[in-house]
Image (tube, rainbow, N blue to C red; front, top):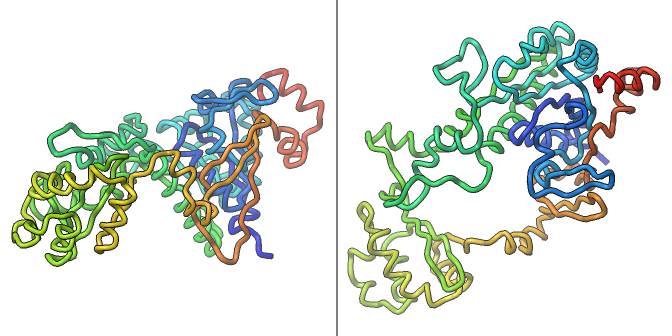
Length: 403
């Protein structure tokens, strides 16, 4: 049987929080040996989040940490200590990738920036994630700003196009400001590894959370460029009508045009044949007419129905849409079961289901349920087997809080 795509690739992971760990989680899912480097005693900040569980050793583990660090190995290492830096450099010498998401300049101040590490290993792929980018030749006025998920959503304009037309900008509840940059970083690492395969040389990767979110706010800048007007929050129907309809047990999202015949069928189906013969109710629609007039007219009917029934009727007519599912409905969804989109992890004697990797490759095996590492769990393996240290040396390093 074929192996996973990144079998044999070794990644030194000095990331924390969400964006960086999400990237290296994807690499681990693809078969890379990811060695997560964490501060001694405390571990990285993501371990302390809530909600959390308690491991068999009494160690708190946040559920987010469990998700983002599945399938990785973990070591403890003090990168501020001279001996710790020396050990890190030795690991760089036997690795393929270094991934970090510290504030700009942090790795350089530690003496572990790209120029230093590529002198040790010219083949190293060095990936950095920051709020607004780190490369000297691409520096802008915000390059030193800190960033997180909400800040990236705000700056990118995503919040400006999210929410009701007469309401304030809305924050998307998921961590898109972190996970989207994580995906782009993993993608860039694989591009750099392919480039190295062809040339024999590594390179530095500079990912800005801001850039990534702007890339995914795909239509608003285009509309502004064409019209000189910011599209705002649903006040204008730019491509095709979209509505979030209220049902008696939730909401249904419906989108898509289809011409006047489809709208005539809708009015007939919901008991309003009078509107089917009125041209202003069968499109094309101008401006905010859909939200001001069409939506309330449909909701007189939809509020009397369950969301799955509303979706069925609209789908049979030819509209594209879906019920707005709750977390419980997603968890129990038969479609996701069929797609094998859940992976079960056992932590502290409890089993947890988490979203599996959505990439389905026909020639690669489905990864077995990955383990979740305890803090420093793989110190012996990394320091003794990979670097050749003796047990006594490890004890000395532990006593000095180097590891």
